[in-house]
Every structure is written in C-alpha cells, then in structure tokens.
Amino acid sequence: MVSRRTALARKTEERRRLALARARRVCEYLKGLGAADAFVIGSVLHPEQFHPHSDVDFVVVGLPDIHMYRVEGRIEEILEGMPFDLIYLDTLPEEHREFLIEKGMAWKEFIGTL
Image (cartoon, rainbow, N blue to C red; front, top):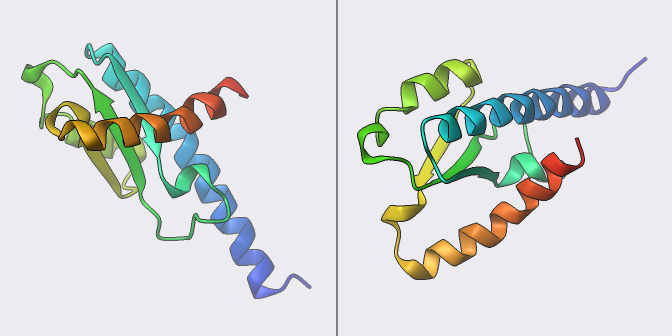
C-alpha cells in the first residue's frame, strides 16, 4: 500500500516534470517571437521547493515591444492552465536584472542535461 505522502510526492514530481516540458515550449515560443533570451527561475527547478500549487516563473529578455503584454494568452495555452508569472527583464532596474540572470543559469544548466 502506498502512503498518502508517497502518492502526493509522486503526483507533485509528475506535475513538476510536466511543467518543465511545457516551460521549455514557452521559452522556444518567446525566442521565436524575437526575444533575445527566455528562461525559467524558481521552484520548478528545485524538486524540494516545488509543491502541488507552484507556479512557473519565466524571465524574458529583449522581447520586441510589439509582443510585450500580448503573449500571456498563448503562454497560458501552452501551459494548459498551470499558473505562471512572466517577468520582462528589460523593464526592471539594473540591480534586479543581474540577480535574475544569475538565477537563469540554473535553467540553462538544466536544459543542457536533457
């Protein structure tokens, strides 16, 4: 018999893996629109921090202005209803940009292992 905790842990890990696969598609979508870069930060990259109600946090760099604030609907479709946050790096103060770029290195390392 599988304990409730084990079943929840399995379900959470399955959801995290699904979120990562969909996140990769979102990043490809954003780059296809001309973004200089797009990456994921946050709990989805860290199994010990991810929980059943976690969202997916995206950072996009250099998205052409014509697409800014118009991409969320398509991202929602790709994620199939998973909650997300989208951070437009270019709109943030410089001191916050460097921190987020450092966080983005974890995503680049992660996708390099796939």
